[in-house]
Length: 279
Image (cartoon, rainbow, N blue to C red; front, side):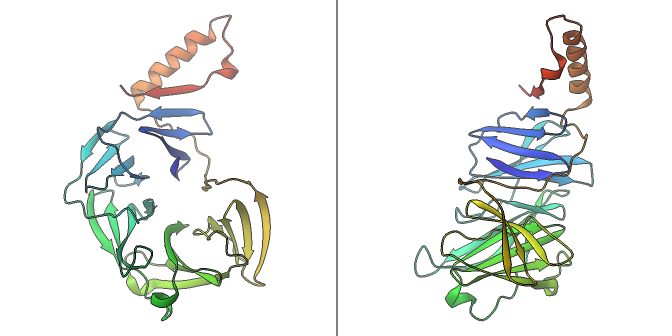
């Protein structure tokens, strides 16, 4: 499962195995087991110390954070309750974010109460106020999703079969900066929109819907199908980079190994996939 992408890296989890991968250089690093079986992960960048971090959270309010720079996990204190109804953690503006909901009359009826944040530089939890939604939210909303559109923390509110409203926080941390950017009409009752992957200057949005990748033109309310995957899929924006997930010693060891293998007549360097995992 793809957890997230950041600065040319993908973070992927397969059962209890976490991997940070740079697909451009074909170098990846397997992370050591955290000691816990987490139900949610998030991946992002701490620009205060030039470090990449992964956080894992469990249903019993336990959390650990992994630092790529130190190569180790450590506990996080004062973890708020992040219910199983929450979506995967979203990285934006140097922090992870989760939506916190409370159930009302039934398990399928809920309202958004707040957005929990985890600042990567201080490794402390906080809160971000959600938008002030339209009056029809409580009686007509069928779902809410959190994401990031560029530098904006974003929320998409679903009114199934009618439309989805995209809200963006234009100035991070300022409640009054929440703006309803666009309303995207539904053309079928199957599936829901996710927060768009990107937006063009002329009002076009690249987004996933059900098993398809589509472009929505907000100027004329039209859709253009890019690809039908005919299966569930994950999509992320990735900017290529040469940044390595390995530390200096691992890079040196890998270079020595590659040099030795390149000197072997039986070696084919073009087929050599480079990877390192921690014990």
